[in-house]
Image (cartoon, rainbow, N blue to C red; front, side):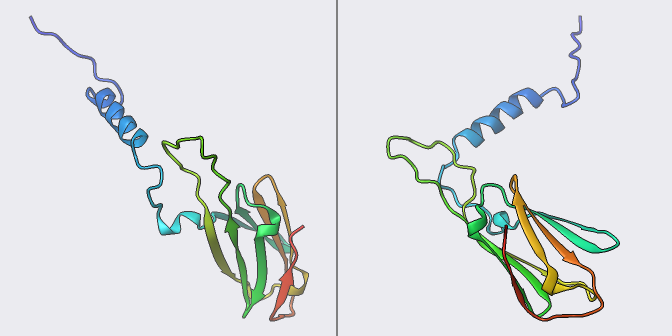
Length: 145
């Protein structure tokens, strides 16, 4: 007599494989290096009739740790996500939080008014508004509110 094993959507051997993968992730070195580009902030860019809007994802970063400049027709966003102080009584098995400095540059559109750029931060998202204009201006520092 033959026994038939119904194959699930992930295959017959998926369960043991996923257990092995789970175990591998649990025993990784807590201080293992992360990819160099891991702190490269993800950005959504939108355009309206009057402005360009950048929504830059910066979770866990205080506005005091963000710097925005306009230099050579580029919007430069840089800063640092600082490590929380680790308690000596804790033994970390895995640390997935990313810490360190980041920088991202955006070439400003030809008809943008860099003297009127504004920035706000809420819920881990930095929103930068770049109004459209016929006048091109070369440099300005933007305060994060």
